[in-house]
Image (cartoon, rainbow, N blue to C red):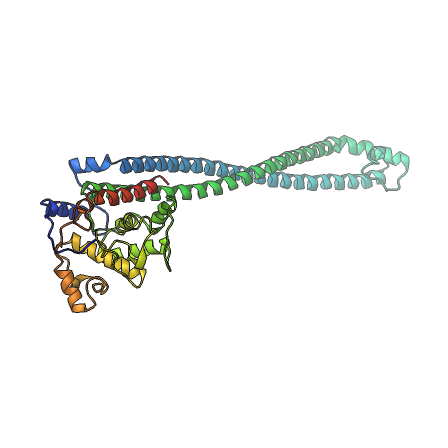
Length: 404
């Protein structure tokens, strides 16, 4: 960038393009959706097409995951119900076994009572020796008692024992089934937890791809408007640095890092409503990927075709702040020092605050380049391809972000 008293020809379309860009920028920094042909042009932007496809894929995956989770949850709940039903049957069988044990004890008590009665009357109990062992009765009376008891109670005792054994078998079978069901429930519980985690991940992916689509549409609208200088950034500092690191640049910076510079660009540009990611792209062009940035000067301020050195700034933030204020002056015909978030840079405009404000307010090219497409040809740089170089870096950053 060079200072000059010459006044380059002002592009006739500047005001029209600025109005278009301003209309596209919403109050929260996202371009409003134009109708009709403009919306069709934005939606046909390659970045928007890819973001839309990514969103469709993410939504489909999220729907499929939700259906799988619902099906698995229903299956798990059915297993839980079956386990509860089996337990109720086991408990019922246990109650029946207890009742049978009580009845059997009652039958034995009756047999003993008959034994006593038959003994007193004279009988034979040899057939009950297994039930009434230990009673000292003579053999003749044992046989008579046994015959009498067998005729009355043998069928009942056998039935009680058979039923008790059947209930025992039922309980054993139900317990085996329960064991299998508990194992299945454990597996399904783990699967439900995993599916819930997957669903949360996919929901976040849908949110991220929705945001990416909004950013892509913003980029498409800004591209359609000629890439306005003013407005919000569409990239984060992390995204800018990720792109930078993937390019193989070899920065030579004193006392700072590319990551710190990216943060400063977004902060300073956010303060003045200048697109910080584009200003960062401009710095890449001006410094060759920060390989040559003497004096914390990242935008060629003070350099010209015949200059031996540019302006020196004491800190990285000072160098960036001056760059952003000059971009604002180029972009906004109504920019005034009193409206700046920070005072005019004393290292660029003038050490005297009053003169600095005066020079900012009376900048000869104020409002001449509201879009990046109008940079170059004397606006900021004499290189006629300057605008395409900066726009190219920015668009490569966007493309890299959209593909990662």
